[in-house]
Length: 109
Image 1 (tube, rainbow, N blue to C red):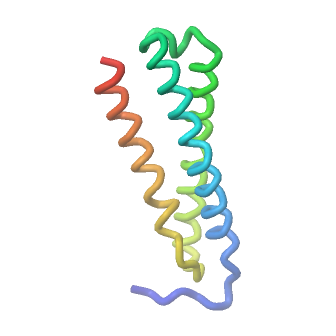
Image 2: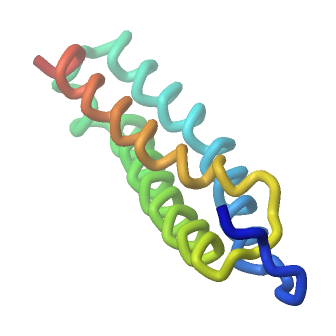
């Protein structure tokens, strides 16, 4: 493995980690809103109520931010920036996609 370059400031890696923290904060909110709508009205109510739409918007925004963090972390890895928690943004997007697919398969049959 190639050693990180010490002459580069880890700006992309820091931004990737900041976006990951924001996504990790918003995802429980989105899942809680969707769970609330599912428990009250069932799967058909997720697009009929403002709470369901709000939860969907939060989840889509979280997915977009996770994709941006993934790209920034990849660019930081290519630049070999010296940052420790770079694995977190690189793991979040595949985990988010897996959870979305599993919810689609098992909840919205």
